[in-house]
Image 1 (cartoon, helix red, strand yellow):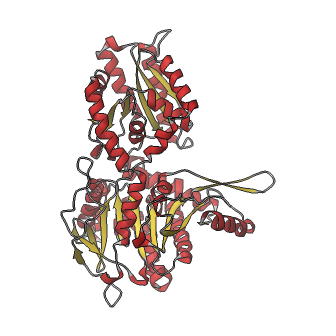
Image 2: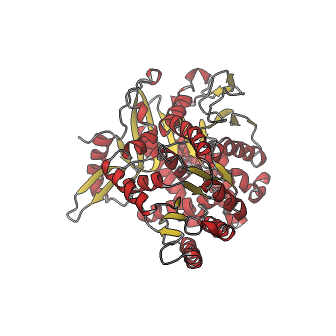
Image 3: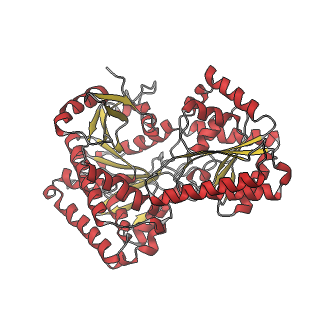
Length: 554
């Protein structure tokens, strides 16, 4: 039998012994393939959410629900279901190809992704894609409903499933098979027709309030969500939640992390050590700046290149002494906007290399591909500076990965103020990527930084990254969810708004520490002892307020 997707941890959370956690994400943590003979093969995938939940293996029973990644014919589904459940505690949600395409690429990535990353101009609403998104969320909700047992906790992950809490609540509460929810979703679609674009997405804050706990990466994101609930929907809010239909939807801050131990351990491999030595010889006498980004318009790769060009123009003494190794991982290559972005980046790389390069030296080493884990760790380890210039990023874990690999070199970290990680990584040089002069100055500061300053900055950075890991994130979220007791539900099955003076894991991080909350937490639980959690959302709702004035009149 294959090993569980949730590794065993020595830590035992006795207060959650025997509880059932249902994790719902767009994709299963299993890679399923079908060979030419029709045989299915299953392989565990890696991911932050799997690592985050590893500590609960002994105390919780798990079920992971998600899409398998491709269409599986009905005749094969019983076999796939049996393998997934028996070997991996997983349940697949089966979607037709048109539904999967409309849900993921048509709506999630073409509407919600640009909207939540301050790129409303990239949106193009298509009602058919909205219907596919809605249909997929209903399909997920029906699958989740079949797995629920009394006392289950349901963790809903990310923006692909924003409708699920409301739909699932309707199904579990038995409100005419979710007819009320279907009517409300129809109203949202009608609003989209009325406005002619995507302002209806503001209603998602209302839909999300059907959850019991809503988790965000940073304090600012949580504050923006609560502001939207008040300004757009007129819902009463407090610092730790929003009141919705007599219930308190609790809102908390849960910054995600990585598992630094996996990077540190990998650097000890002989093959990685050998590769590090090769790269150090190749770049001997040269300061290496590393950039690792998906080739996405939110990652600010053109802004990074403009800043490097300005730096070399203003500091010609560094020509031949500084090199940018930029890894641009291919992303959505069939989308025109991304094709245009690649053309822009290629043109900039060619121009800068042509202007400052020589026969022996090129200032930019550009790779449009993915790298294996060993090569990536080696690249992080030999770099003197990591440069992140995202124009908007939920967290940006590349910065965490770089810090984890810098125990020996203790390189400098330049980080965009628009990345969520900038609120946590004290010791970074924080910049505005839209200001090329500021970024160019930061590059100069980083490559000229003295050893003592680099060491002190790295000490603070590594302390934070090592403490607030992916496992800490998952532990904080589940522990916060477990505080919501049945005692906080009144006799009619409605949640009471009773403040408690408990310390919550979902708190604003200040200087790498989790302070005691300044506000009391409200404990609630919904009927049927079902707990709904909507986790790790990168929802910047405040940016859509100008587009949502119409809803204040509905």
